[in-house]
Length: 159
Image 1 (tube, rainbow, N blue to C red):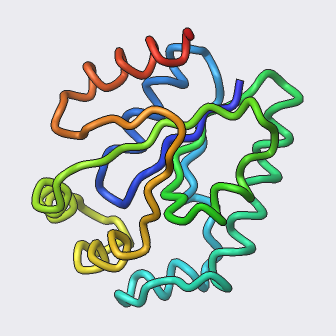
Image 2: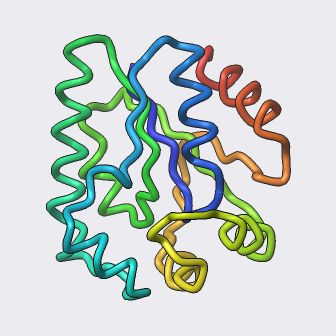
């Protein structure tokens, strides 16, 4: 089972993804940990990444998903802002998608509260502008509690 939790920064991908991974006893991967140093340096300076910056990162994530599939699966938390990015990550047709969505002001508050994260709150608007809403998978509102979101995701994944 491969599950990808998507959404702009600050929506709770890590919280929901790690909760799902714990439930299914699957490895959890945070896409943030796969960025090359050049990408982290850019984002730390408040410079949004472009498609060229993201391609090696997405390819590394797809490789990890293919490797994880051989050992039973994994859960990946990844912004996957554009459909073209999601197509790179869709390493097989059975990938399950959970998309986190919410009000910009709520996301902004969450980002401001984060400590020691290279993704600065000021970059939220560029992520929102880049986001291409998918027409598949489960869409979860981040206004619900993490527990409610995980429960809804588990019900969806059982189908």
